[in-house]
Amino acid sequence: MKKDINISFKSLKAVPARLRPILNKHGVFAAVLFVSIVYLFVVWRISSYAGAEPAVEAVDEALTSSAVPKIDPKAIGQIQSLEQNSPQVQALFNQARNNPFQE
Image 1 (cartoon, helix red, strand yellow):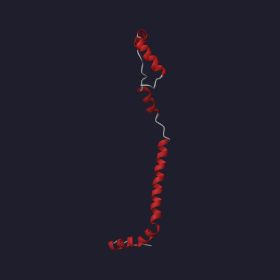
Image 2: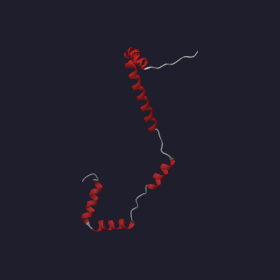
Image 3: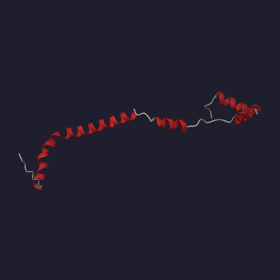
Image 4: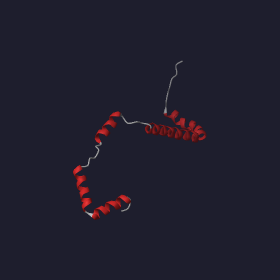
């Protein structure tokens, strides 16, 4: 069973003419099927990215790079002594404590 395959330009021109009735009949279905497959693929990729956990090395690096800010105890003492010595500053601090959202 040996078949000779001869492809010529004339035979290739006849292919779209044979496919045109099939595309007219099933073209919309094929387009909807293609769009739904692409949509499912995108949803699948989004769900896989949403559930992804960071690597242990990245978490460790983030924890070591974020330093906790430290306040100098001398600065705290100086601010408290200034607050105690000035009644205007003391009133300002009390007002800020009572209503922190007022500007």
